[in-house]
Image 1 (tube, rainbow over the protein chains, first blue to last red):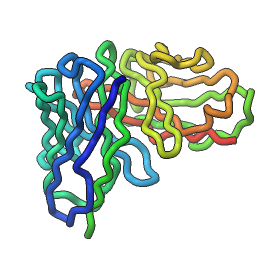
Image 2: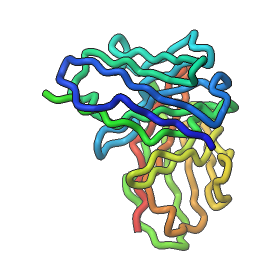
Image 3: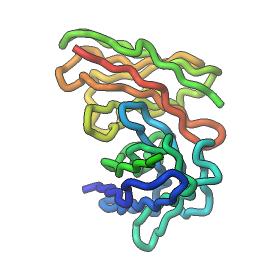
Image 4: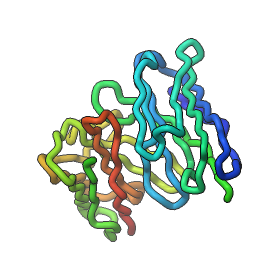
Length: 119
Length: 108
């Protein structure tokens, strides 16, 4: 059974840092690009970042560029998001998402971990 | 960057009716990079349609996607009670980043 389990969320002060983790199972992790997508309370979906299968290329939303770093550990089937200089507008549920692989779509989402940035 | 607009914001329908949701891009895009998702309260999104018109694994055939250029649509042929949810369109851009529309809520 395919599973993506996020962890590392919590309450962090404005300007602080946090590292999110995602443990993947049930599929060959190295075969797929991986992504982070967030959703602020009561709002829509917002793309955050992507990493290629080998981890050699990364892509970021403008809101994340320079503050967030996506990475993966293929030896442990883990995805990470290092976040720094956090702002109140970064408050959201952060979903770890698996790429479909055959097309530009996101075919499996973790339940997410809540990040709350306090002012 | 290309902006996606979805309409209507809310669609009020009854079970058994047909739902047509619109997604408009601010410039012409390839349908190959257009996808649709369903999200129910308290749940993670679920992929419905990819490549503009291909149903994802396990998605019932009452869901269909179509469109080209700047105008795309998701049609639910006969609404079932479990279809009442929020629907998002998504585009994969030339910058290798994803963009989501603001969503359409389908309510009873």
